Amino acid sequence: MKVKRSIKVRKLNMKAVAMMIAALLVVVTILVTLIFNPFSKYPKYMTRVSNEYKKIGHHEVIKEATDDRVTVLHYPALDNEKVNTWIQEFTNQSKERSKGLSNKDGKKAEIFQDYSIYQVHDKYVTVDIKTSLNSEITDVISRTYDIESGEFVKASDLFNELGLKKLISDVRATLSKPKEMERQSYLKATSLDEDTALSISKSNVVFNIKGFNKPVSFDLSKITDYFSHSIGSFEKTNGEIAPVYLDRGIDPKEKMVAFTFDDGPHHRNTQLIMDEMDKYDGQATFFMLGERVNQNPSIVKEIVSRGHQIANHSFTHPDFNSMDIQDVNKEIKNTEEALFKASGLKGPFMVRPPYGNANAEVRKGAPVTFVNWSVDSEDWVSRDPQQICNTIDKYKHDGAIILLHDIYESSYEGFKCAAKKLHDQGYKFVTVEELLESRNDIVKTNALYFNADPIQ
Image (cartoon, rainbow, N blue to C red; front, side):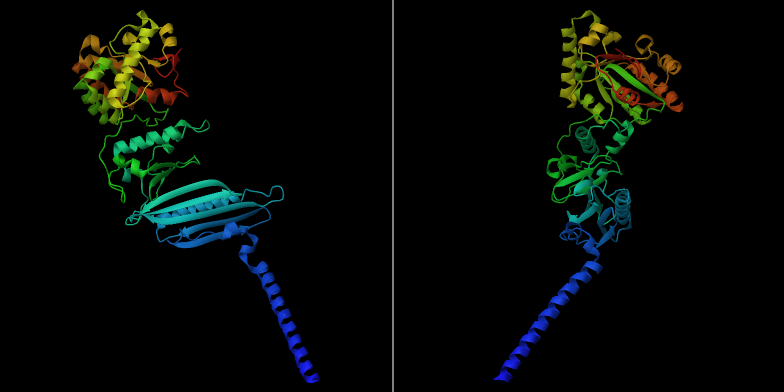
C-alpha cells in the first residue's frame, strides 16, 4: 500500500516539475523574443501588413527605432532597374524625412510606409506607395509600368492629343493653384507630361500631381473617346471631344509678343495664319465677330483645337462708347453664345471693343477683360504687305499686343514677313491670355489692357 502511494507521489512530483519546466520555457521564450525579436520595438500595424497585393517582386523592409521615433518602411524590390530606382528614391526620401522628427508628449513619432503591387489589363504593373506619420497619411504616390518595355506609362502613351488636353483642363479645374506655388510650377505640375506620376487600376487612371496631396482620378469607362488605343477591356471609341484652351505656361522672363487678329474668322486667311504660327511653335489670339462666327463655326473649333485663343470682338462691330451699357452687354453676350455654340468653350472671353473704344463707363458696366493694342500695324489702311511688316518691326517691343486683321490677304502676307523677322530677333509668339497671365498675378475684369499693364 505504501509502495503504491509512493509511486503516486513520485508521479505527481514529476508532473509538477514538468509543468514548472514548461512554464519556465514559456517565460524564457517570451524574454528571448522581447530581447532578440526585431519587431518587438514596433507597433503591430507597422509590421503585420497584408501580403495580398505583394506577390510581384520581393517584399523588403527598412526598420529603425530611436528614442524619438519608430520607422518601418515596406517596399518592393523588382527586376526592373528603372522602377527600382524610383521606389528607392521615394523610400529614401521617406527615411530622410523621418530623421527630423522628434518625440512629442512622451510619444514616439511613427513613420510608416506600405505598398501594393499588382498587374492590370494584362499589359501593365501598378505600384502604389503610401506613407503616414502617426497614422495620418502624408504621401500617396503610384506609378504604372509597361511589362513588355519596362518603361513607365505616360499620359501621352494612353490618350490622343485632344483627349490629353481635356484631361489637363479637368485636372487644373480640380486642383487650383495654391497661393504659395509659382504659376510656372503649377502649370508644369499639371501638364500631365512624362514627369507626372500615373497609375492604372482595373477601372481608373489616376494622376498624382507633384505638390498636391490629392490624386485626381478618371473613370476609364467615361473617357474612352480620349484613348489612343484600347486599354484592357475598355474599347477605344471615336466620339467628339469638346476642345479646350490651355495655357502653355510661358516664362515671364521670355521676350514675347501677342499677335492678334480682328474681324474674322475668315474661311482661308485664318487657317493660313495658324499654319504660319506652327512654324514657330507660336499661338495667336483671334478677336471674332459673332456674325462671322455663326458663318464659320468649323474654323472657330479648329482655332481652339490647334491651341490658339478665341476672343470676343462684339457681334455687329458697333461703337461701345455711343451705346447704352445694356446694349453693350447684349453685343458681348450674343458673341459669347456664338463662340460657345461653335467651340464648346464657355465664356467669359476677353473682349476687344470695336475701334478700341471702351471708356470708363463701358469698362465699369461690362464684367469682362478688355484688350486693345500697343502696336497698330495699320494693315486696314495700307493693305501693303511690306509696309505692314515694316510697321510691326519698327514698333514691336517685349510684351507688345499687335493689331492685325485676318480678313485681308495682305494682312496675312505682312504678318508672315513680320513673324519671321521677330522670330529671328528672339521673340516668342503667345496668346494675349498667356502674355497677361505671365506678367500679372491676376488678370482683372472691368479693366483695359494695351500691353501687360491694365488701365482701370
